[in-house]
Length: 395
Image (cartoon, rainbow, N blue to C red; front, side, top):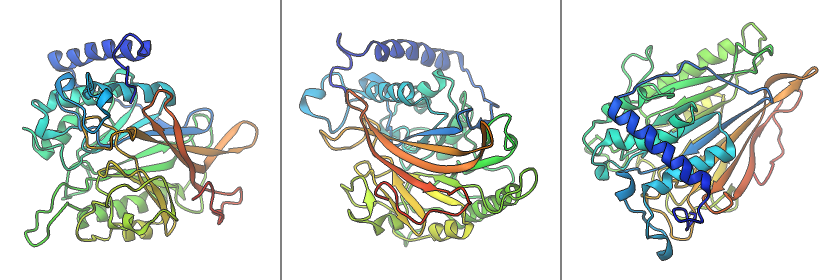
């Protein structure tokens, strides 16, 4: 955190962004604005696509909501607004093509009006006209809106690509199960083809089965939808135009980590593990389902704020983002952080762009320099189309 964020020594852009932000929030709240964007996701002309993951904002009532687990000299004046400014700084520094909010976006039990809390929490993305997507955590519905009500409100917000659920899924558990396709560079042979697939799932809140305690899990109906969607996208990728030999790479976002996250120790991950893995008490088999699908290169979750590691298990990277929000528990002196994922295309011909060549990630700390740490290649593909066997950047 920037300790002097709100005094005269604070960065001018942060304070000016806040003034603009409050105007946007007021307009949304008092005029009831609800818009959607039809802009398709697409790789830019440099052959790149960048995703900013924001985990566990725990947004509540703005300026009057205090920070948790910060140093004594940071307590005064620290509130939800520090979370807002952190997002603004990340947008300015990274210029993401998509922001993904991976649950516990608001802390329901402290949010007097969950709609206003969501307006404020997501306002930086809305204000900057950036496409964004969200899934639910285990705390979003703990105010006056139901879990479905929270997701429905998100779906109607400006610039969001979030969906309540797939239209063709039939009966499916949870709210906020959907996929997004990212097309190739405009003007390239892949401009009308998804070369990167993003999956979003509701990992639930708490078990509803009396004999099973603890957190919720990704249910059979969701896994069936995921597998059908993956197979459909693979078929499309292997068909004309520009038919390919295998699936386009896929990334998965949800809130509660899978039991498989407990497979790692300091010898085989990048980052830190400072608390236990708060996964469901049962294993519903979603990791095996992803292996069966064959297209998933990485999974990104939140929930455990003091963990920010990435580890690879059976060719799937399992990654935490680390805690982002200032009204969320954390560790005093351990900076709030965000995860960035950059997907790069391979060059073809003279100035042309083809399919995905590599997927890399890093984290940014909310310090005075937005320090970049733990840069790592999650997946790469050689020019012949076969995966590299060598581990890269500590992977």
